Image 1 (cartoon, rainbow, N blue to C red):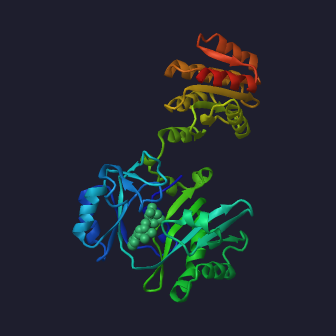
Image 2: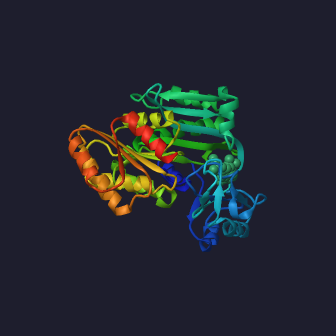
Image 3: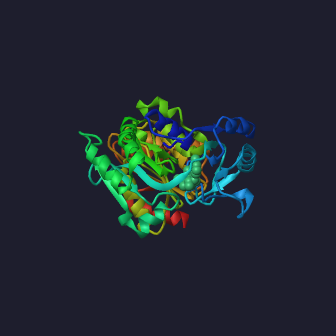
Length: 396
Ligand code: ADP
Ligand code: MG
């Protein structure tokens, strides 16, 4: 789950991180009061969407010459004018895809006098089984380019989970970022605080780009992007409360309600499977026969008929889906339950595209009987190979 920049900053502020004063607004009427509550004379109006690259982004409605999704303003009037210009329009960035994202919230923030823009992120480094800081002196809007062209400018410092962020770790990170004086002092509390926030809130990613050294020598968190581990959200009701469903795909919201693992992709065959391994095998074999999956929905081990029906509806809600492959190995999951769920869902939403079902395992005969007697146009398959060939042929 992702949150907005202003929410991430509020959260980090609670851990003692230095962030600027700012006010989030959802309507143009709030702009003037928001700006007046800040010290000035420099303000920044920042689009709040769940995607990066906003500064270099372009608003669809405003044409190529208009300013981007993060704008400096030198007066309250300029803040208000920018808010009117931006709010409600669609921002296209390197991370949004061509469709872009509608900007429904803006963050009006105190403008900082920037000396240097640095990069600092925390992530779970699976290769060492630790949370790691990934830092670079080359922060700002082109970090992807830096990673690509000059990877040696990016330094990784893994943290021992027993000891936490040691003084040696802080020194290592600070020297990688060439921090001196006040900034090096700030770093002694900032890096442990970021680590504490990351661990306590079960973050999957905390990215600060840029972390800045201001002209007064101090550090400030100027941008913040946070993703949380979805599997740990049950113990963070405060984080769940920050969810902005307008930023999420309706299908993914529905899937999370049913505790289904739903992953959208680019092809045109929808897949209902149980278990991640079977999902991978199903996608591989579709690819082998010359097509690509549009998505997969993993109904897991012990799904109910209702859950299967919900999964089926989520899969068919994607307009890219031209055919569906249900590939279930019934172990704990029983084939008759799958069959009943599929039949119930098809009866409810209708079926205008080919559906191939391959069932194997517990109660398979009963499952097949339910499908055969349903009167629906379902193609039965005997094994994975047969199923993949049949669905690929059907959508060709
Ligand atoms: P994004 O990464 O989505 O483009 P950022 O929040 O990183 O958005 O903002 C882009 C750039 O705008 C920053 O690299 C920085 O140069 C500038 N900027 C952002 N916030 C401020 C601020 N409060 N004061 C001054 N400049 C800012
Ligand atoms: Mg940024």
